[in-house]
Length: 457
Image (tube, rainbow, N blue to C red; front, side, top):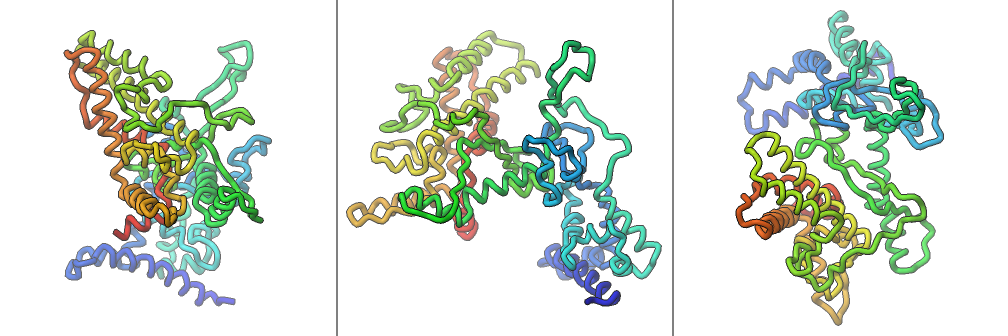
């Protein structure tokens, strides 16, 4: 059992090691930068961290996940304290949940400090408990140490008057007779539970990439017996929050790379994917003759609507730009659905079919789970293994999404020109932005072994 002095030294060692790692990273190649080095002295860095901790807040429900411009309150609610509904919700997490952090991303290093584990608990937990040994470890000045303890513990706090915002987009449904009575409404869209989303993401990632489930999946494909239970999430869609800056939404969102899975909203047993277009013997989904993507869902109507709007020669103002962006967003959302539909129908490895003539970038987009399959090793077809290795390497490089986005932009401008040669071409950068997000939002993330390979290259 540790004495009080031992525990004080244990806390100091953990904090010193954390600061030293950050100092080394900051001063790499700048050994003569005395001013920067002084900022990483023990007391100096802790004083600055205690000041900056007020810029971030530990939460379980993140407002900006609903809309990045929302300016209201995010909330910290212990899941076990929530009403215990029969439906799945944050309450099922109990005490086993991940806290998220919102606020100034530049202050997230303070949260990393407070997550340090000492004697089986985070520093934050010890500070909230008012641990005397930790307080002594912070500073020899008792008054200063107490102030720092309170500052760090305030990472978890409640706002005196929580506020919402028009961008919070909370959706209510009239369940009674009087639309003027708030009690006659039911909340359909509560605040985004980041803690629950993180738990769901971890479970889905484990089902898709965990070694035990991969072995069970392979046994299923090989029609072999297996003792393990096989888990499968079908018809998933991934919503990406924060765009290129997921850290602006929250810390956990950043750890997930902005990826937030959505389950299929289908009544059981309607898991069977719908029939769709045949992509075999086709060079591109943007093929002009067969019009594969054009005939999907409402794409033709959307393209016609955009062309008609532009042919009316609207004024060059913000309203016109917003209208064009709305059309473009609807068309690229259809691109997301198209990709999800093809993946759901085809199954992993459908592009291995000898009649699949799609461009490689489109194959990578529409059959990403092929990278999880073992490379084929058939003496009668030595080129099969080489093709699989080339496919996996191309997927790991990751430039295929830009290639598909470029082809989509050329296709859409071509569709507009077919309807009127007087129509101005849409901006390439804008179309690439929307299309890349649509393509990556539903494409499976690079499997871990592929990412590692790409990072080592």
